[in-house]
Amino acid sequence: MSIAADVVIRSTSVADPPMYDETLLSHQQAMLDACRSGNLERLQQLFLKHNIKQGDSPVKESWIRDLTAPTSGPPKYIRETALQYGPPPTDELIQAAISAKKPIIILFLLKTYPKFNFWDSKIMDTALTHQDVYTFKAMYAYDKRVLGYDDHMKTALTLTLEEEGTSLANFLLDNFACVNDIGWPCQGAAINAAISDGQQLEVIERILEKNLDGIEMSCAATFAVWSSRIDVLKLFRDRGYLRPEYLSDESLVRGLERAWKWKNDKMVIFLEDCLEERRVQARAEKPEQSKKCEESKQNEAKDKVQYGEKSSPGEKDSGGSTWWHIWR
Image (cartoon, helix red, strand yellow):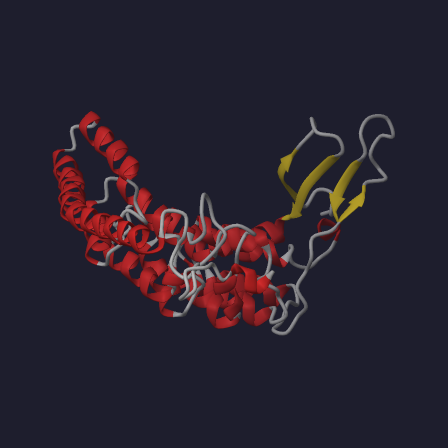
């Protein structure tokens, strides 16, 4: 059978110039299918048959111009690997195993290609989209840098929390993954993602313990209000993060209006209690402030009597004349 006949057309785009014909030989497609199904025995047989052995260099995707295509119309490119007898690109094999959550296949592939570089956005994006703690453990055993991955905005932990990956989040925290990032809309986005995406309180407490200095608590407190996370708000209150310097009265009132709108009675009661506590505290502080103000006025009056209306203490010497002339 000719190579031309022994192909599997996975997808062909005829609308977008230039055209990229994603063609694989049938044995290459069979390898991908084995990765997706987790059939390690089948994958080993295919590798043995096609002389793929442990220690091989990773196969990179490359495209070449199809010189047999008509000269009219957009240029056509085909995979260089489609003209070879070996495996498909290594990253596609690993992505297939990650997407299917087959860590045993991932470990086998990494032993076969020990020089494979995980530091690739496609691989990490796949792993964080199809989250699985055992997949990450396999990747982490091969390259510990996976815990430090970020997409230039969010860390692996933040991206995990946005997908509600509690077990994976705990694994990342256990292994000292970065909890601080630039994030959006404020620094320390991991805790904001945990709050807004309904993560367990234990995870949020662990993030606080890991790197409190890198978290904008005012932003985190606001997220808790808008996400109606009473459990988080109680935690923050106990730790002093609901004080006015972290959460403004305006934010509390807006949260209260939202709670009323959605008929969240528990949230209404909690926020009303917070506002009442602030009013009580303000009333308690007012007499003390008035007392200090009165004392200041009394001292000012004494100074005027002792030194005159236009002079302040120290402006007159013992003889009654000002001492500014000494410096003139």
